[in-house]
Amino acid sequence: MSTSSDRFVRFLRCAALAFAVGSVSTSALAGPKPATPTPAQSDEKTEQAGKLFNEGVEAVKKFQWAEALSAFEQSAAIIPNANTTLNIGVCERALGRYVRAQRSFEHALAENDQAGGNVLSASSVGDAKSYLKEASGLIVHANVTVVPVEAAIAVDGRPIASLGEGQPFAAGVEPAGEGRPAPAPKFELVLDPGAHVFVLSRKGFSDAVVNKTLAPGSSLELSFELEKLPATLKISADAKGAIVQVGKVDVGPVPVDVLRPAGSYPVVVQKEGFDTYETNVTIRAGEETKINAVLPKTKLNVAKQWWFWTSIAGALGTAGVITYFATRPAPKFPAYQGGTTGWVVGTTATTHF
Image (cartoon, rainbow, N blue to C red; front, side):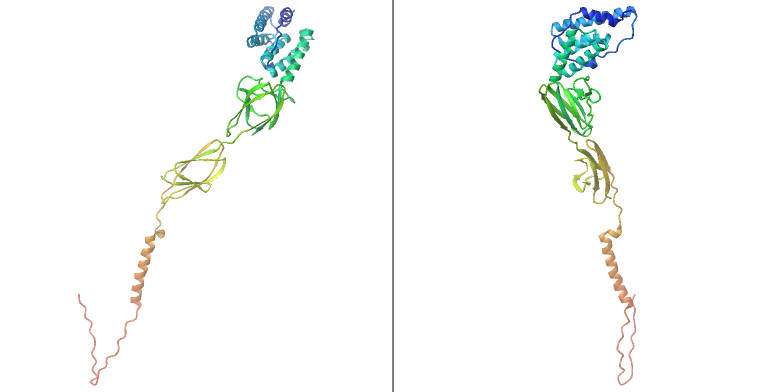
């Protein structure tokens, strides 16, 4: 019993192939191969795949390469076939997508070999090899250096893709999406010639957006280095007008926003009449850290007040006088001489109230 793939091959041998100038992605053409269908399903799938293939051929005749590509890809998703894959590569080549075209031509030749070499004609095999050589000569090879290595990289709005172990990475073969981390500090990247937009990003760093126009078949060095973003330190306090020091440098009264490189810093917040607030803070690049300093009012210590010591000094002075008089010996008056009569006059103390 013949399968849908067998009947589709016979259909393709009778169909006009759409060879012109083009290129594509093997990921787009690698639709899941359907399980062995019933005869009714086989006829339905063969008819559907054949219809899409013919739509692709008609679009090629009108030089509508994007429409032709879409039709061939849909046909390949139903019934994979070397002829369809080859035409996908042709369309991508016409659109200037040489990296994807190279993969498609390689895939078409591999599919033909797996089928015993009975799908592609000798002239089609020759065309595929010729297109493959042409694409290889037009592809750009770049040695890319990325700092820091964890930075995500995207080219023309698509992440870069691995072509396999030991192979370079490729731009332009993945669906549109966010960048992925660079695979290594330095790696090889293959790209289509022409204008490209490289976007690199990493948390804590400024994004790097670089426009490059690459000559066909060129080899070059591309270096990308991201700049660290400063960290933001926002400092407030419950004591209005308190002065802030960051890293022993006055930065002004609260509230204050301080930009510093990532790292650890001592922070001091102080105001007369309040206890000083001190802490150490670690801030990260591109991030914001908040500190709300609480400064309790200073408790009164009479021993440290000027008037306390002044009064003490005064008190000590008075005590000295009192002590002096209290310890001073009673005065000794000279003895009265009684004269010739021998009489002595005594003294009488009188107290008045």
